[in-house]
Length: 324
Image (cartoon, rainbow, N blue to C red; front, side):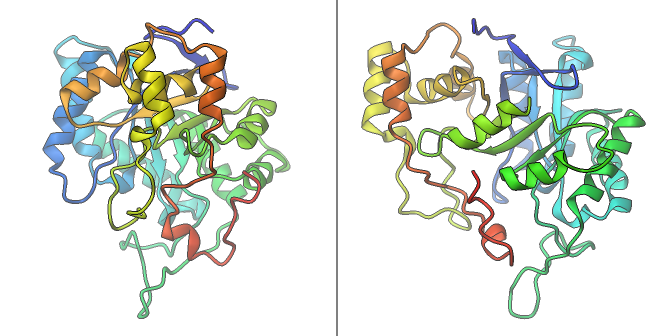
């Protein structure tokens, strides 16, 4: 696969997804206007795939950035691939379209390019996006994922979104959708945590067998946010094998980490708020990792999750990662 900055993968519905995307998640303490500035920089650098979500709380700022870059002639709307996500409190079928329309309103866009079920775990519907009981336990709400999926299919049919997919789904949960009687559209992708310590080999093979694209987040490790992340987990970009390969290619560890997954035909999401790093993360198309480097990086897999997601662990059906 000859990778270039404008390379894309054709998904199972015929639409094209750019191979590298700009991630826009930021912790609650991060000023939202900085995410708007960072998204503008990303588009100026060459990113055409922007990944966001309702729960991030910054759709308005990301939308401002996209529209500003359209207004100044940097891009046209059809050149931007925007991904949004359905939050857990909106799994009930009658809530899906209003949730999508609310996101579009905040973005001030007419449609999304891709809309994902953010997590397979539904939460109690209502204004509280993280509903908990008096003991601080999450209040889960069961909705058949197949019914949620049908509501996404309807959103696609009316033109609110071009492609639909899932995020953080296991093989078993994907099979639930794929085996649904009367399935109209297959998920085009499954967005999951993926990096050199969690290379998702089995899930990748399954997704490829079903013509489903794997999209990876936390490719460079995480921001080590104390609320979610084990502070004793290894720092990915300081891995000695990764650093050694990066030195050999005169590239940064981040560039090699991203390139490794690109060569595995995985869509990579890179997140940063500094101009220099946003540029650096996009400069992954002028070198190739030979088979011995790919093998060495594959050997780093530990099935280690940076995002154990307490939301997962508290769910009565946890663990659902056994099939990954």
